[in-house]
Image (cartoon, rainbow, N blue to C red):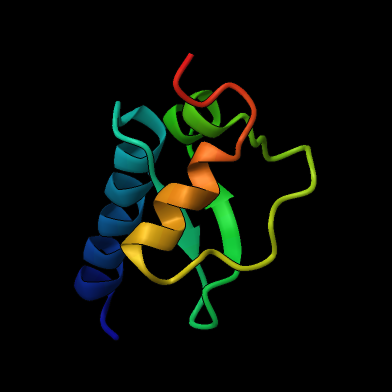
Length: 78
């Protein structure tokens, strides 16, 4: 990869990190096996799960299961 491509790729990574950090929407980053890697602040506010607390190892795959999973979280709907 040439330097121009490398700089562009680094800028894209920084932009994605800023979107994740400053978004008002709840976001979860998972790996290919659906294991939770990271969550943003709105996710923490909705579910009560924090980066410094044990996270569920696997995020439910179906939308209905994810909603059920979130409803079980402390503080959901308050």
